Image 1 (cartoon, one colour):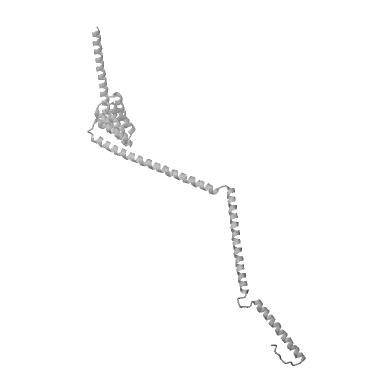
Image 2 (tube, helix red, strand yellow; image 1 turned 60 degrees about the vertical axis):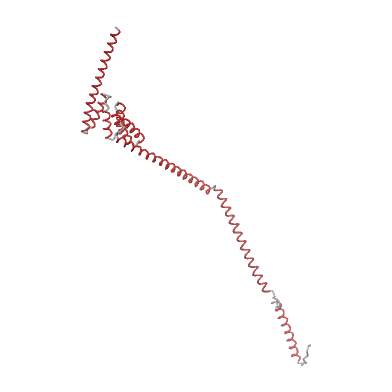
Length: 281
């Protein structure tokens, strides 16, 4: 009895599996037919109908990795890189065969290159080569992605250095402006202090003028004293020479003597008496 139930279960399970397999095969065949129809529409530049049929094909069978891959190519040619990447990823993750994985990751690398995400492009091309090491096109794209990644990193380092330099310049500029502002504030100062400084300057200037006047007065007195000294020196008698006053006194004495002699002679003329001259010596 137990053996009968076991055999019955195995028969049913085998029949179920066969039915399930047949169902998947039918779904895959239907999906493939729709995919071929979408391919034909796409070749006729009927993108809208092709897109609709690719989506139908994808919904009919997950095993049909060609539909999402072809739809991804259609999006890529339309420069819809975000939608294209999603379909390439779907094809690469659901596919069990290396050929599809190789193509899907290769195209994912191309999307990353279009977006200038070179680091992710390198990883995508590496994954593609793991599934097909002989593909020279993928190898070339990988080398190109590595070179662009290197240049991009160098540019980022240069931009970072330039940014740091600009920040330092801006910092120095702000510091200079701050120092200049402080100097202007110091020059402006308190109005009262400025007035006091002006008064002090005027006082200092007045003292300087007084000192100059004193100096001029002193120079003038020195000149007067010098002139007076020269005049006194002129008036002073030289050695073995009479002074002006002495000469004047001498002339007056001589005039007095002459006057006396004249008076005597006049007196004699009046009396008329002749006298003998006598010598006084």
